[in-house]
Length: 312
Image (cartoon, rainbow, N blue to C red; front, side, top):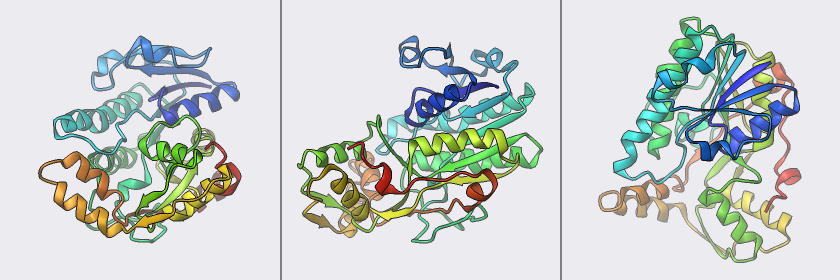
């Protein structure tokens, strides 16, 4: 099979490309620069392109069997001056990639969304049928991914496009450089004594399990459907306790309450909105979803936290 991947140099995109190559796929990756192309494994065809400029990658879609659209801004702590760029990439870029893939006759398009598009699930582990009434977004990336999911991808599904939506949970694993994972590496050295927000909870998914799920969607998923690729739900306190056991170090000695994060977010909203965004995501928020559909239809399974949190 011939696959085209956007976002192939990112955390999940890199794992997906490794998964596809191991299964004999011919992989093409859209990259923003030649420098990023050097990060790709041997055997991957790299095409410099900008997903906000459709003419830059239209030719790359011809003859492709499946498109995996992962390119997005997902970080927390976006400064106001960068919000238009996030909108262009997450919303307009998605519109261009999915729309052109459908126009070029690609038989399977996998749009990689996130469980966070639902907003705070308030402790509920939701299914694919869940629709929040008035979601409160903790970050700009989350808000724009919500638009891409519900205002672009889902309407395309209803219009008959061969599109599957994948919603991974919170990803972890080797190679991630996000601030949260830097905290894990700090803990592995026995230097993480203080943490914030013990009752925040996520559906934790190892990046390799998520990549395997994306491949299975292309091979056995039903177009027009959404699938959660989510691991088990754990609070921050539980997650850091498991990583401490894996690293044979002490877990954080003191946990500050999530209410403090909410207070800091309110205080910083005016002068430092990007920092307020970071604290909002730690203010007792849960992003939880169940993956029974992917398990029953695809035979996908996710490994429990204790088995794979050895990377720290």
